[in-house]
Each structure stands twice: as structure tokens, then as C-alpha cells.
Amino acid sequence: MTIRSGRTRRSVAAVVGGVLVAGALAACSSDPTQKSSGGDADVLNMYLYQKPKTFSPLAPNNGPDQLVMSFIFDSLYGADSSYALKPHLAAAAPEVSDDAKTITFKLKPGLKWSDGKPLTSKDVVFTYNALANPETGSAQAGKFAAVTGAEALADGEADSLKGVTAPDATTVKITTSRPAAGLPGLVGNTPILPEHVLGDVPTEGLGDNGFFAKPTVGSGAFTFVDYKTDQYVELKANPNFREPASIGKVYLKPVTSDVATAQLRTGEMDLTQVSPTDLPTVKQMDGVKVASAKSPGFTRISVNQSQERFKDARVRQALLTAIDRKGLVDQVLSGAGSVVNSSFYGDIASSAANGYAYDPAKAKSLLAEAGWDGSKPVTLSWIPGQRDRDTAVTVIQSQLKAVGVEVKLKQVQADELLSSYEEKSYDMALFGGGNYATEPSTVATITDCDQGYPAGGNVAHFCDPKLDELLSEADAIADPAERKSLFQEAAEVENAQVPYLWLYNPDTIWAHRTGLSGFEPAGLPTNEVGTWNFANWKLS
Image 1 (cartoon, rainbow, N blue to C red):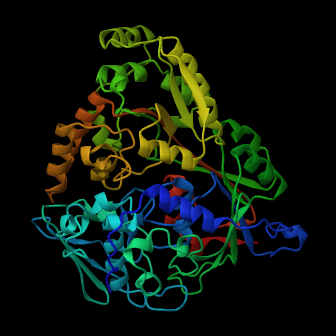
Image 2 (cartoon, one colour):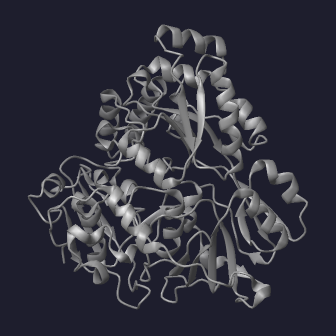
Image 3 (tube, rainbow, N blue to C red):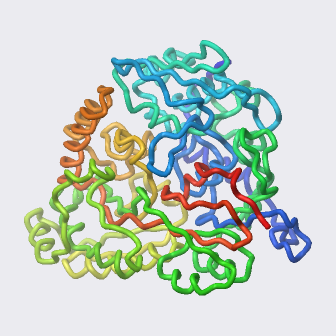
């Protein structure tokens, strides 16, 4: 069944606003998360680093939303500890034709939704059509640009993607209008939606449908129960999950990192990410274990290049050179991280030759060459609550001032930041996350000229046709060695243009009460927690 077509385009802001209204629930008088106060004993309390906004794969990417969705929705693929594609709903790796224009996915047999209904290839087709159609309010449509029929769908000339079909209940076949070897990595980790629940919802109303405020039917290890605004998201084990979890309930609690650390000590929190500055304290706690892993997710500053003053690459190079990023790693992260000079990761990023070492004199020279007007201040926005970011912004403010850039700091919430991206009303914004290691071509989602937010993830509104061309060429080749060579060239171009101010890759540091066993740290960003094997987690 395809999504019904209603041709009134809804803005992302309206979608988010509708979900917020629908999701606002009254606070309860007791706290069921506290085991000592009569709550369930078989419950895991876990840190949620920011307040969620909506539980919709159609909405713009937002870390806490994605974290919650990783528990309640499953995807064809996730990423393993080496950041390679790992089958989830899929039975094996995707089959890619030699010309990289036909991609076939096979689902595991016997999959079910949490309500017991069969999960089939029709659900995947439905989801991809919803994501690719701007009429749903989807902010993910750009990911499907290469799929046959995507342009006709976007223009309202078709009701579905011609290139996405389900030959049988366990097979999904995608054909593309151009070679697209990276497509599995681009769309394979997208949460799959239940066609039997949403299939009759008109296109016009899909994005802000009440389901996304309370998605009680899912395919993840847990099912959604409730969201008590500012308190917790309540989940319960999904008995129909492909590998049922041993833990009965999970409460995801949106608190600041220092509160999470304090609750870890008291036993109110079972699992949390730890700020490196808190690590010495956490290691001294009784009944607590610490585990860490390297992460491809990086903290960066987006510079709004829709503003004329930021369009000159020399300005962005100067800003990066003015920041002592090694000092941030050493002082803010206590050494638990590394400086990065590209959005690419690992060997591919090795061709990003310019290390942009801390050099205030050079930064001043570059700004002078670019004709920088130091009389106009710059506002740096960020979402507060994570210790390293809260500290980093004050250090960066001081260091940029030293080279003639007056910075004003502004704390914002997620909805305000996303709106400023869409309206192009911000100056600079510090944020983090992102896994571009699994499929390097996904860097295009944050750099391509046609991926400007909200159509894509290019919140900096950066554009370099040469970089676009290289990424497109790499996507057109199936041979891994040839692709790698092109990605390395792309990394060199990106490194010179500085679309973002890359700060650092923070190590992922987790701490948990010893009553939780079977937990293994993942180096992936927090919002990809769902790639872990929940079946191994046990409470005692």
C-alpha cells in the first residue's frame, strides 16, 4: 500500500510543533524509576543526554530522539564495533550489482512487530516511500535522490518510488537512476515503520500524526510506554523482538551529565555516559564499572555560510587555527579523545594534510587577508548539559577573542537550534555525533550543495561543487579500492575548505552499576545505542 497523496507541503517546524503538543504529558506524582520506592525491580535507568522532541524517523536528525528510537524501532542494518554494516532486520549484507544501480536486501524470516503482526518487505517499501516524499514533512528525502522515481515523487508527479519494490515478503529491490554503491550505508540504518498502522494515513498528515508522539508499535528490543516530559521515557521489553531482552523495563532520563554522575553514585542511575572530567571520581565509586571505546562521532562547530562574512574559506581556516584543539582534548577531555581535521574517518582522513595547528598569529593573518570585520560580534550557540561542551565553549570564546573575533555565548534547546538552522538565523553552533565511518559517502549529507538543511544535514549551508563531484564519483563505483582513493581525494578537498570547525573525537566513556552485566561499550555516538546486543544485558 502506498501513502495517500495530499499535495500540501508541511514545514518541518509545523511537524515538530505538532508532535511537541501531542507529546506533552502531565507529570506523575510518584517516580516508578526508583526501585526503593515501590517501582519495578527489573528496571534499567539510563542517562538520556538531552530532552527528546519527537520519535519520528521523518523529522530532522536529533540525537536524543534517535537514541530513543534505537530502542523501539529496528533497521535493516546497524554498525558493528569496526563501523562496518551489521545486519539487523536484514539477513545478510546487501547485494550490489556490478554497475552499482541495483541493490537487493533480504530480510530475516519470521520477523514480527511488537503487536505480533508480520514485519515484511512491504513495511520497508512503505518506510522508504514515506522518507523520500517531501509531502510527509520528511527531512530525509535527500538520501533517496539516486533512487529511480525520486524526482517524480518529489515533484508530485508520482505517489511512490518506482525504484523500490518488494518482489516477495522477504526481498526489497532498489534500482537507481545513477550508480549508488553507498546507498545501503545511507538508508540502511533508517528505522522501519509499520505499514499496517500508518499505511492509511494521508501523506498530508503523516509527519505530525499522533503515532510519533506515542509509537506503541515497533520492531525494536523495547516498546514505547510513555513519555513524562522532562522526567523520563518509559519502555518495556518487546516479546516479539528477534532476540528478546532479559530486562523488563528501561527508563531513559533526560538529565545533565553531572546529575547523571551523581545518580550513578546513589544507585538511581544504572548506566550513563561519563564526562572525562568526572572519570577520576567515578572510578572511586563503589559498585561501579567503567568501560570506554574510540568513537567516529566528532564534536564540531557549524559556521553559517549563508552569511557573507563566513563564505571565504580563509575565515573558516582562521577560526580553526585560532582554537587550541589539542589543549581542549588534554584539558576538557582529560586526554580521552583526539583532534580531527576532516569529517571522514580513519585511513580515508589521512589525506587531510593540513592539521591546522594552534597558531593565533596565523589566524590573525588569515582574517586580515579575508578582510574580516572585527567590530561585528559572533554568537556561538550550543545545547547545555554536557560537561565537555559547556567547558569548551568558554575556552573557544576566549581564544577567538584573542585573534579579534568577539564571541557571545548563547544556550539554546534543540527545537530552537533546529529552527535556527532552517531559518539560517544562527552564526555558529557547537554540536556533536555522526557516524561517517560505516559509509564514507554519507559525508555528502552534511556537505553537498543540495543537502542544505532541512532537505539534508548540511546545517552549515556549505557548497563546493568539486567535493560533490568526488563523492558522486565514489558512489558510482562498486570496487572498494577505487572508492577509497576517491574518498581520500575528497577528504583532501574538504580539509582545505573547512566546511565545519572540527574540534575533536571524544572517546565514548560509559559507567554502570555492577548489577548490570553483559554490557559492552560501543564507540558509536550515543544516538546509535540501539546497535548494541540488548539480549546480553542482564540485571541482578
